[in-house]
Image: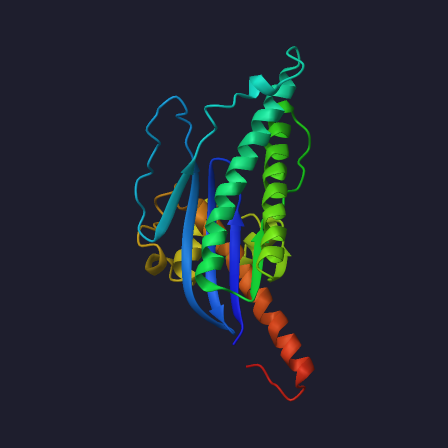
Length: 245
């Protein structure tokens, strides 16, 4: 029996959506949904608790209160230094929280393989410093997450596969529309994947909070389709008489 985790990660500083499915051979046994939410209330001692969403485990993270970006700046006259340090700290903390969610799933299911699917970013036309900061931050976050994935492969002796489809490629796969917006992706989740059984609060008339989880699910499903296709190719090479229906 081959045990596999397929993990879709829709990375974001504000709300990362994570979908994790556990397979035994080619049969899906269970699925988990997670959401990592940024708590902006750094001056409030009590940490923010998101409104519960059925079947979604929500985790929060915040910037450290004992380390200020300004304390790490060498050149006080260069504001870009402080912004870069702040983005780096945020990416590091978010990636560790994401890694902890994945770590717990690996410990729970003890898989042989892990397939990770992370949406790739296409550098847009430069229109200003704010846009560049956003894109560079997401690239940094993905870099830290990739480092954690490599570490999981080494620490747990896992066979790891990383997929990085473009946003349009994933939308085309999931919703048959390469330019699908959030409402179209949510509609595809509900109508094509029986999404209301997975997340009862899913509603195409209500956007927000579950959007990133749905995107994580779409990435996971693309990973699942690729994994099944690859598995069939391997089995066919080992036994040419296999016919996959």
